[in-house]
Image (cartoon, rainbow, N blue to C red; front, side):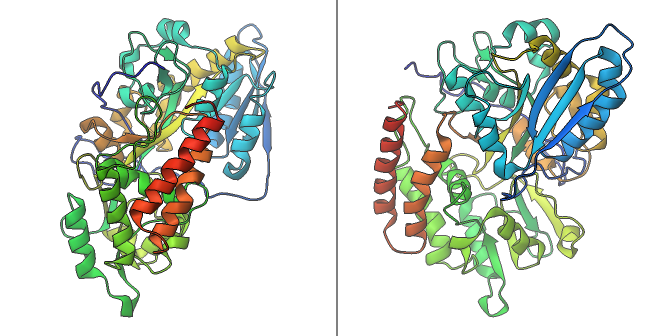
Length: 458
């Protein structure tokens, strides 16, 4: 397996939506949640949109996505604009996030029924790439877009080195030889969210965060300085741990896909996270059972002072929203945060790839993105869209993507779910004090090796 070039200039974008921006002289418009909680009930919404064509008929396409406000807006605009202009009718299937991954990966087997997949770049797109199930889009991109028009970081998540179907670091920025398997349409990152009435200046590193959290924590009043999700299921603890691990300078894999987290840096970062709960007690006592929804509820309810959520997590109309700001997550050796998102992708077995590409061009056109980003407040993916970013929910995510080059990206592997599960159980045991951090990372290292070997990736 060839190794990737080391950091090129990982300056990326993020999306528009939540807090004040000082790093880029723009702010962000309120972004509506793109990362809904896991839903157990499966409800598939299929919308077929038709219209009166003003050009020759263009056939039909079928799209798969998970249910978000962006999809609702696109459905509306398809009926008003896309189908009338192109003659292409659209069947747009949306599935709750809890069942989206399963439906997505099932559609990867054999001939996909879909012409366009809105692929999550962490949990589904890498499996499609590894299986050879996606159409390379280089020629189409070259013809209808300019690579330089995109904020580079997330385009780098959609780019792969030639001849390579996995990426240990999750990104590739040598666009001169990259193979593009997708085109980005939203991005997200993890900013620091804090209470300005309690935290006058945001902590710049983890030591400052701990110091502030210790001063503010008052168990008698059930108030805590910080909160993170510790539940070992569905990537919850993994999310919180990855950000700290990356910030302290460790990675999930090396360039040969060997586990790279059981190092002095990995131990230091993991121990710090565990100590927040076991030693310093500056997080709620039920932290080992919390998911991202519960942690945000703690903050929204006024029970914690700081949190590192995904930037797509709106506060809504709650009292703390008036005293909340966003900033870059604490910096260790690197920023303790991660970026992720979603991309338009075309299955290699698509019945109407030309129709799917017409949709992608339309969906990323300036007039449509002015509505999706400028009005709805969806994520920025093109440099021109920075003009739409206003005061709002994810401004610091935009800022850290534009101004920093050390934000983490999940490894692009087809079995991330299995790797996350293998890591999370021993990490949770360390969090509750059943085993030491060193023992947890040793167990996790072996479990991850077994998972990678089972997938023939190691």
